Each structure stands twice: as structure tokens, then as C-alpha cells.
Image (cartoon, rainbow, N blue to C red):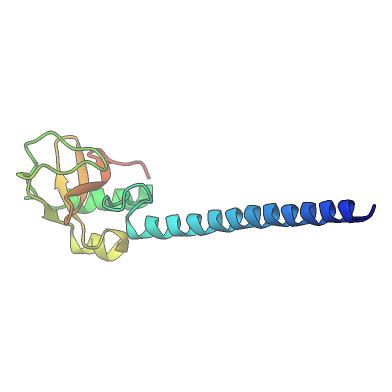
Length: 145
């Protein structure tokens, strides 16, 4: 090979290597966006990329939490569970009965449709009934407006 053969070949190899690196970086950026989109879709369906079996905590505003609180507290005969209250993402004990959320609450807050609630001494929990997992917790004191 002549004088120009080796540098030309090195240049071509370097350009090919640079192109591969650029493609790999672009692919990872694209995958990162795709993974974020998949994660966002999982969030709206109640699952997370880490655990596809557990529903995510409901993203309720303070106003929505106040509406749930008022609706549940308006049920005079709703029983208070005689067990230790679970926290978000914990399973409700098998012997604790769940109650239907008031129709006005599920109508006003579509995010809680199909969910149930349990009153405890110190909180109201919103439950995903199929898994019995707590998806929201509302302290049983009047929320500030």
C-alpha cells in the first residue's frame, strides 16, 4: 500500500467507529424516551416498571382528597375498621371489609371509580379491590382548603 492507503483506511475506520458510537448514543436516547413513555403509560394504568403487579398510588390533589374525605364522612353508618391501618402500597388485611365509595365521589373524581374505601381511627384508605392494595391514604382530620 502506498502512503495514502494507510491513513485513508484509518480515516475510514475512524469514521465508521464514530458513526457507530453516534448511532449507539442516538439509540440509547431514543430508548430512554421510549422507556419514559412506557413508564408514563404504566403510571396512568396503575402499575410501575419495577412491579407490574402493584397499582401505583393514585395522584389525587388536595381538593380531591378533601372531596373523598367529605363524601366518606357523610356516610353515617360506615364502619370503622378494628385493625391496624395499612399504609400506601400495603395490602388490606383479609378480614377487613371494604366499602363502596359514594357515587357522588366516583362521579366527581373518575380516578377513583372502581375503588373502595375503609375507615380507620386515624385515616381513610382507598383500596384497589382486586389486589386489596392501598392506593391512597387520607388522614381523618379536616383538610385545609
